[in-house]
Length: 564
Image 1 (cartoon, helix red, strand yellow):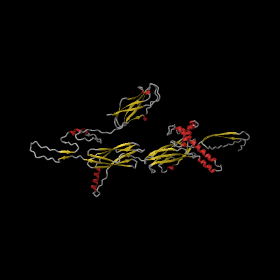
Image 2 (tube, one colour):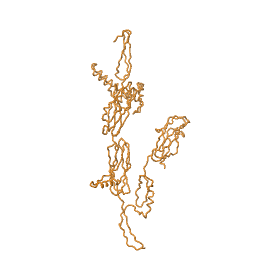
Image 3 (cartoon, one colour):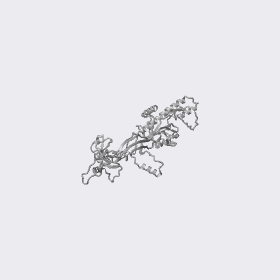
Image 4 (cartoon, helix red, strand yellow):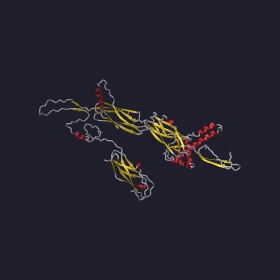
């Protein structure tokens, strides 16, 4: 009710509080004196401040959210809300998603789902409000506060496996997908002593469709976390809107290895010869593992009562004695699930029992693996019967006298002064003076009476030929008119250590490309590249003879073996 004086104006203020998000339309009448009532329509849309994170959401497995998601999808498929969300969806269109659908459509779907959850929550609160008398103002205030406590699907940030001592970081992008500026803050106190930290201060009035990024760090060593799973719920409170929960996850794990043998025991080996045994290292965990192996000798006690100079001399002599064991390789790294073989070589230098221990150290791990190694060296000995050969007295110019000596030992014996065959057999094995290679040539032992057969041993090198230009290993030929020719250059590099000889050819299932002269590589002959980064240029020629659909083909490498 009101009164308007002649010639004056009266301004009516209309306040409307939408109970649920979405488009609304209400009407009321204004009657002036005896005149007919005038109808006034009130139209608008109820909304709430909200944000969007470029993280996957925890929807699968939750029956409530899956049902709401299906309804939201059906509603968007009908096109009822699609045009209204395009502008806001463009703000997050560049964000990577976890599913196969388009990013902008996924943002619209999440927005629609949030609106339906807020509407469902608001309807429940309205039912509770209508059940109480209007005089219960305290209850009404509590209901109004509950309107902002709707449960929305959690965002998930899983940093995977993290090794103590490493710090993993992830950049998160927050976008204001509401119609009004949004203010929000992160409750960082919940991250105390969890290893997680967030670099985000209070954000005030972030404009619509604008974004802000922040960094999430995880350092398990700073909080002295034990091995195992870490799961923290980080709330992001939006002023005047719902609270968005971010589930932070990580798995604290140490690198570890499994060794195929817990003990190595060599048979008796003659000095000058060697014997090899193999152990296998297996990384069964989900984090990369760097390892190194060292050989340690058992510590022999030295008499403490000896004079200082003699005590020090004995210690130095003990250190200078060769261990007799060698490990190849002595260090390396293994990816998750990868295996490698380690060769342990026993080369005795004197006749005695050898004892050692393989110490396997793992980087960033408290695990220490020890493998005892035992071996025995034998020196070659000759037993002659008789030990002394005594010949009787002889006259000058006589026919002489003969004696027989029996030599017992399963090895070949020859006289250096009278036997020259060993010189011819050992000639190919002599190392040139200019050869500084530390590698040894291993030969199998020869039985008595056999000739020396040299057997070369080496190490295989993996062939690796790569395309270094263009980036991405994709040659874009573009649109070419029929009868014209386009040429592109490709740079090929040999990243292996050995020289290689290979040939390139194009394979395609498109019939038009199989015609002669359409898609060619030059040179078509064998290519030879030196090892360690040598490069060459390959020309790709495309000359279409008829209209063709967009295509893609592959180039195969045919290796003919290492070049000389």
